[in-house]
Length: 116
Length: 114
Image (tube, rainbow over all chains, first blue to last red; front, side, top):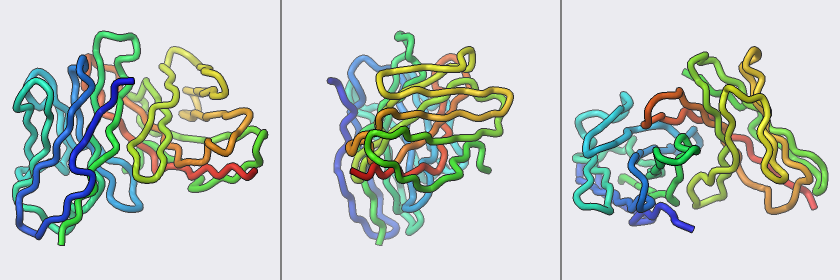
């Protein structure tokens, strides 16, 4: 069964460093998303992406964050200068507009980001 | 800003019995609801969904009920099995052409007792 894959599974970085989290969405999906979950809290929407541009972003997604689809398969989240409070589990998701179940988003296993 | 609430952080149910997980929402613009299941160190896995035009959707052992007037939905699992032990998230979205961001509840940890 097709799945969303994320790398790395765990990323440790120093405060102020740049990190790039990578995702390979399901191949025929057109909509891509990033969510995050801080330990003990709920899953929060960060950004959605369609047709090579951001469709919607949350207030969390400030100027330190950016997303990119550099080729036909990868979808990346970049944090330019990490802060301690960026430590969280980051989930990538994708969805398919064509099918009846277009609202269903399929999630990757996540990348745990630890900022020291 | 808790637009989606799961008021029970945990629930324990005997194997073979029915598990009922509840979810309330406040945003009347929500019209599509999903349940996800999450194991530790994994991402949320889609379980079942329901559109606001329905009040019930069934898939095998899983049934979701929606009460729009009460802004309440529930997930019924019957019979419950040990493999159902996980954290269950309720999520909601507004109908639009694509890019429906999901708003999640805080989750309910379900433990099935053998």
